[in-house]
Each structure stands twice: as structure tokens, then as C-alpha cells.
Length: 350
Image 1: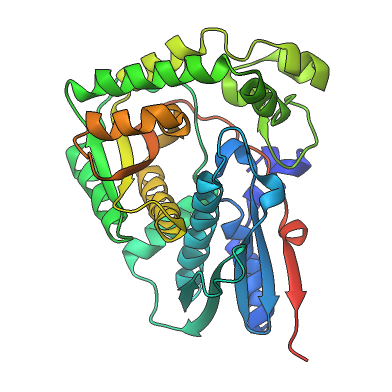
Image 2: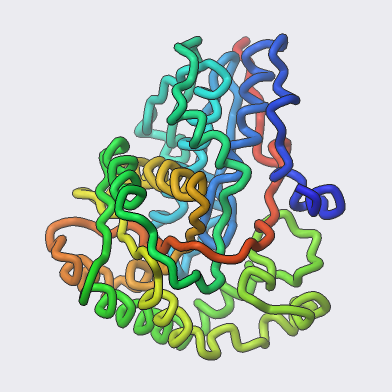
């Protein structure tokens, strides 16, 4: 990536498999695989994951100092984000000839320990697994308007199959349901933007385009130009992020070539981790086909709308976890990433 050479916070996106330490020990190989894991999506680009090396294995841990107490009071989205990082780690491991043995929630007394992962040598990766791996550095959220161009049924059904591989349902929103979901998205925007606590939390994670921060969302992701290149934090906080947002998001949903809802039959950390891993597979599959994606999670983040969303898609007894739109559109730079050394600790057995 050309931009990564001049923009330090974007350098993690320039990971190259040629740097893989083939002759190093397993711990060093895990460190390298984590360079792919940190490229996973997360709410507000908080990157709420920590990794701890334990001899020849690694723990995936929740970094709750990066929680979003207003928009995500139960840390549901936080755990989903960590699940996405776990999914990327698994996919990267397969590319380099390993099979990841994963134990979810291995210690009930340690709620921050979400998964333990050990590696063993496996069969060479399949073409399907390679397709997903190649897309990891190319995938990032794209909040721009998409082209009026259909996402083919074959790809859509493949996305559904990828989610089911992780025991998650991807509900494709079709026909009149699209307008109903778009209305809930707009309603969620209005409720959130009327809440000063929400606006304050959101603004704290939106940075100027020239920010050196390794997390959060830069203005260009929202279509903000030079204002966000020069504005300081106080200007950003006073800028009306909600101006026209409800109408814009509703239009994005209505005109989305493909709108989808990730759904699980339970609503607990195990289901959230499954959702994150399914999300990673689905987004990578889409990106490998040239399709962008972004989130419209307002009807899930606003508690009173979540039940209505489930009813609108005919999933009355299930739990919507994410709303994602897919489509073709213009390229945009990714958001910054914290490097592996900022999220990794090591604990050797004595």
C-alpha cells in the first residue's frame, strides 16, 4: 500500500507474507500471525483486543478499557470484535500450514479470557482458504455510497454459507423488508444523536484526517475533507456529527445492493464470539469478490429497536447481532491500527 509508507498509523495494513519467520520458533510465528488478526473490524475502530503468549499458544483477551459504555453497555460488540480478530488469526494460520485449535471461554473465573489458541501442523490450505487470506489486508469498512449494481445471488448465498460454517445465520434482507429496516436505522440514528452521552462518546473516537492516533475513526471515513484535516479535538466535538445522518443512513440502507443481518439463537459471549468469526469470513469473502461493506447497527445498539428488528425480519425468537450492507464502490483508505507490540504480552511457564 503506497499510503502506508508515509502514514505510520496505517503501516500495519502493509503486512507481507514474505516477512513470515519460517525458521523461527512457534511463538515468533504466532507474533507474525497476529499482524493479520489486528486488521479485524471493531466498533468505532476501538480494537478492543489483547493477546497473551503462553509458551507455544496464545490467549485472545478482551481489553475492556476500550469499551463503549453508551453504545455497547454489555460489551456485546466488544466481544464480537475480538471474535473477528480470532477469525482472522485462524485464517492466517491456515495459510501458513497450521490448524488453529481453539478453546472458547476456557476459564469461567476470567471473563476477559475469550479464547485459547494453539497451533498444530495441518494440511496445505485449500483454494477457498487462500481466497479468504488474500483479502485480509484489503478488507476495511467503506461508508461511502455504493454503486447501483447488484451483488450476485451466487455470492450472496456463499456469504450465507460462510456464516453458517460458524453456526451463525446471515439473513438477507429483500423486497419490502429493506424499507422497514431502513426506517429502523433512521429511527436509531435520531435516538442516538439526541443523547448527549452518545454524541460525546462518538466524538471521542473521531479524529482529524492527519491524526497520529493508532485507533478511532478519521474524518475521511465519513466523507469529511479539509475541515477534518485541520480541526482539533474541540472543533471535532462541537461539529454536528448527526446533521443529516439519519436521512443519509436510511438512504444507504434503502439503496444498498445487499443488506443483511447477522442472527444467533442465543445472546451470550459464546454466540458473540461465533458472530465475530462469522463476520470475518463473510467480509473477507465479499472483499475477495471486489465487494465493500460497512455497518448500520443502530437498530441493534438502541435496545428498544432490537426486538422490532428481529420481528421485521421474521426472527422473533432470535437475536440480531449486526446489520451489514454490501456493495461495489470507490476505494477509500483504511482506518489506523495499533501494531502488534501494543496489544501483545508474553508469559512463559516457569
